[in-house]
Amino acid sequence: MSLDSWLTQLQSTGCRITAARRAVTEVMQSTERALTPVEVYDAARKRDPRLGLVTVYRTLEKLESLGLIQRVHHEQGCQAFLRAGEGHQHLLLCERCGRAVLFDGDDLEALFARVGEQTGFEIKSHWLQLYGLCQDCRTDL
View 1: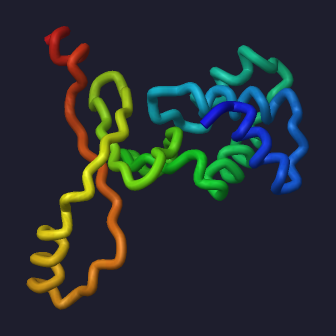
View 2 (view 1 turned 30 degrees about the vertical axis):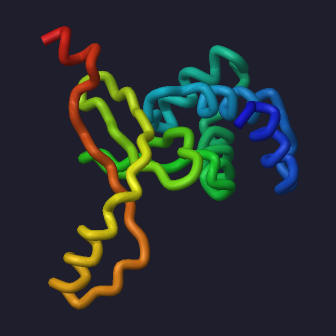
């Protein structure tokens, strides 16, 4: 999905497209890493030095509510964000450099059926995140 499409969706919710919002949206739309709000702030300030941290938080919140970005869970909490996948995808994160890759994986039905049977739960949805080392980080070892 293009940057213009993201900005159009933001605008359709009543958000004015300011230089600051555009800068935050550009950073999130183009990143391959999960970024904390402070990292987004640092990167977006290179595009708009007048950007404030409150605008970053509000824009991230709006982008998340539109399904354009998703929260990424780390040991430190759920305060990092990444461009959302299209359709049903899962997340693979490099523990060293933070690179994130979305991958397809819909063949989990047998696992869910087994878990449901063992626990008595009816599984309604899931969210899967895998951690490891990307190829670049593995070759640096």
